[in-house]
Image 1 (spheres, rainbow, N blue to C red):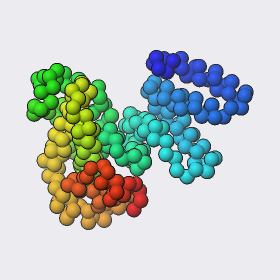
Image 2 (cartoon, rainbow, N blue to C red):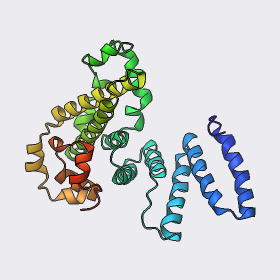
Image 3 (cartoon, rainbow, N blue to C red):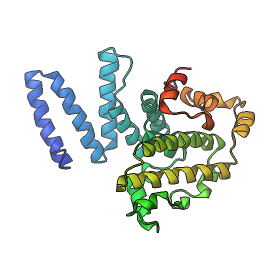
Length: 276
């Protein structure tokens, strides 16, 4: 039923199955059902219920089973998106950072974190939003030669200069950091698929152009440079008061020019931003 998109019917069936499992005391099966239940509630936009269930799972793993590290990124990502869809940016930011601390190679996670720093919903840069925008572009996407053309992106279709100017300097810096990571990782994905000309690949090219255009817009709007950030903002005492451990390391340690190939980065850079 879940595969058919019948999420409400799936929940009803899950309740029946859970009753059978309780009678037969098969706890392992119950845990599998909870995962499907969480996904159903998320698909039905019942984000509060999804959050509640994920928190219960985390409590079971960390407290009852005495496992201090809850590293189920599938559930953590649903948790992040649930908070994000409820526009609870502070909570979603923390959960996205937890996901990235476990696996920092997924450009979508960095992109969603960028949306949080920009105080924008997930839909701002969602696949559906991008697809609708691509339809309005004049560049022909049916030809493989179109991939070599310069793609002109109107970033105001996604976020306005006024919105960017309203952000405080710290969120501008952090959104720039997140965008740089996202664009770099997306570029790696594109390079690995450079011989393909499918619609999905073309959309990745457009997405990369959108990210890069937004990066340039942030640099212009916020007047951000590496020297300016290092000399003026990293010395402020309130950085430690307004940033968590993930962000402090990020601000101090990350330079756009220092991004390397994944295999080099893995050997020379700290994998987990929480290890200060």
